[in-house]
Image 1 (spheres, rainbow, N blue to C red):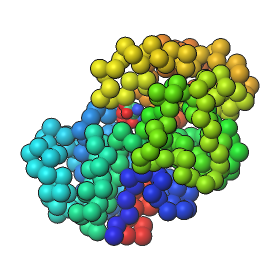
Image 2 (tube, helix red, strand yellow):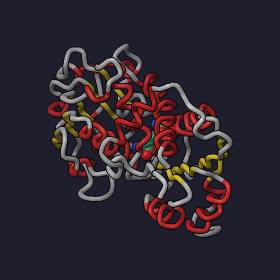
Image 3 (spheres, rainbow, N blue to C red):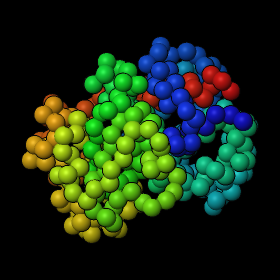
Image 4 (spheres, rainbow, N blue to C red):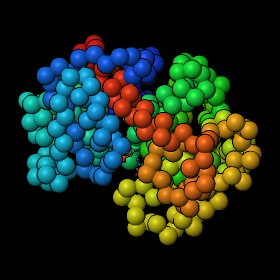
Length: 304
Ligand code: CP
Ligand code: NVA
């Protein structure tokens, strides 16, 4: 079986640390002459660009394919798409609407084709890898293993990004607080569940103020994730108190930083001045998307 990066929860112990360590090393030609299929059923700027750069840095060649072109389960089945991709590529990275696609691909061609999740409704693992690299760069001289004890508050809608981030942070021993109204809190079940990680700590609270109290990092994501546009009005009404503002940050650690996976919606989940202030690490997060993807690809290829 090849190695896959579908959720961070499914990765074995030590894999996250290994990926982060590869991310910080000089790139090696581990994809020399190999193709990587990058399949996008939904829009992307950062993931698409950083994936292409990472594949090239490791000596491979990226091939973009849009969801409309291949029509997963419409033009042909996910399984047949997987069988075709396995004939041409060594890795397939996908942004999909239905997280179940990954299980089907791994079951069909997982012994021949490495599979990476580039965002599903359940998880965004490559973003979380970039985020812990960013935190380590800021707080612990690049050592993710020293993030134990860091206090991270995530506020707003508990999205795919929040789930993968919380899993990654708990794995590294950090203290995570998720602040959200009940209807937007961590879903009761499903893949990439930070409740199942045994290290670090996890607290769920219904108040943004309580969530950020003493936090070293305050993280947020869009209130209207891709595919949820029809819920815009009710989400804006329900999540208003969770906007990351200077006033909210007054309750965090004095040196707290602000993070956001982007794209940002100034005036919704985050105040414009906060996002554009010196305490915002968002552009370092963007930069680390490339190293994170390099690390993930290298980890997949090293021992396969
Ligand atoms: N953060 C992130 O995944 O951005 P894109 O949707 O632009 O790839
Ligand atoms: N939660 C957001 C993340 C975008 C990178 C979404 O799924 O649209």
